[in-house]
Image (cartoon, rainbow, N blue to C red; front, top):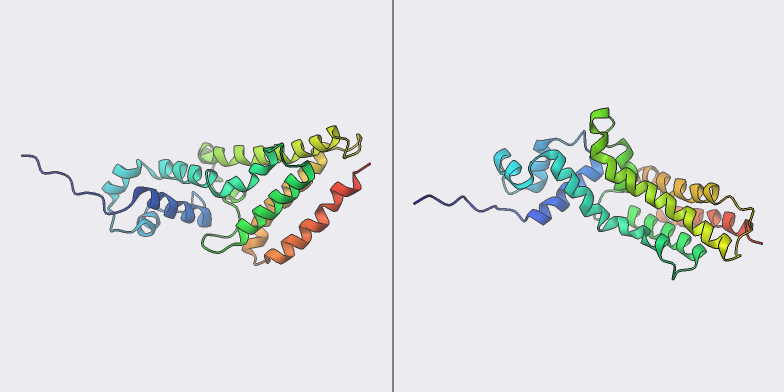
Length: 203
């Protein structure tokens, strides 16, 4: 009778979350297999790792999806038409800085930091989902400005793309600043000032 394989000594979903934190902290290219094995724990061997996840690239893809399905949801308000456009922008900014500064995970945003995660040309496809997410968030800010114009809240001469880019660029910059130790109180004060751009564009 064939001997059954030894059961895995780790929770696969928990392992993906642990790997997500490591990729979030260090990026794709600089994270090694040995670091991933140590992060997952349970004495997982290289064969067991490949049996469970296929490859480092496949694990990164799962880790990215885990992030997009959880932490990245702070930007969902940009696409909720039930929220007034100005409120949607400010709510998204404040929710995101709160997430990026909280304890329990690496500082910053994995989506924003992903632009530096795999700089080699052959790895561009690996971080494509992060690039798509960044583009979607940028489009969401622009869309909110367009909603404000359509509702008559903002002047018809408002440059929706320029104003939307101002909000999006601020959010991308938060990741580096959070890692430099900027506190959430400073970010929230900055958001208050940033929202004055919206108020200046009113009728």
